[in-house]
Amino acid sequence: MQHQMLAPAVVLVLWSIVMLIWLAASRLPALGQMGGLAAAKPGGRGQDLEGVLPDQINWKSHNYAHLMEQPTLFYAISVILAISGATQTDVWLAWGYVGLRVAHSLWQALVNSVPVRFTLFLISTTLLAALAVRALSLTLLH
Image (tube, rainbow, N blue to C red; front, top):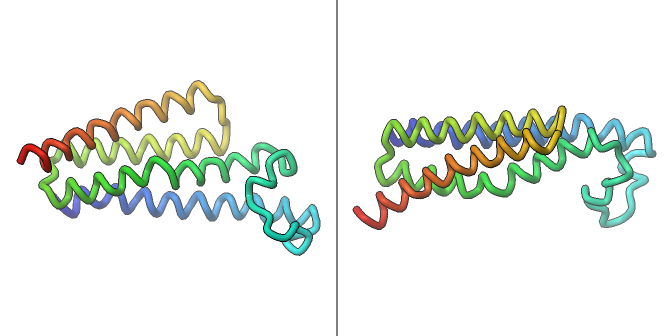
């Protein structure tokens, strides 16, 4: 079950790389129209492009940042469960989390209405909390 528990984490890492490529593929042409990277101010950061690039282009960057936040907890929990003895339910919860994060990414990058995005976030967070409680029971009570 160890490998099955780690597979969703690997898929989420790969999805994060897909989002990074998508953000670069949308942002770099837009920057090119503004003079390219050579015209960027020294020390500039992605946040500096807020209000400069169209919102729809920045949405990919926002989502990539989100994938660097809460999912880090998911990676830790996945490893803890894999080491401690994940069950099939844990694996299903992990795949559910990953599926919802991918759906969240697509929604945020393409449509970005907050009520749906928040709902996807809330449900995925609930699955992550369930995985954390399961990890706690395997580590603290075992």
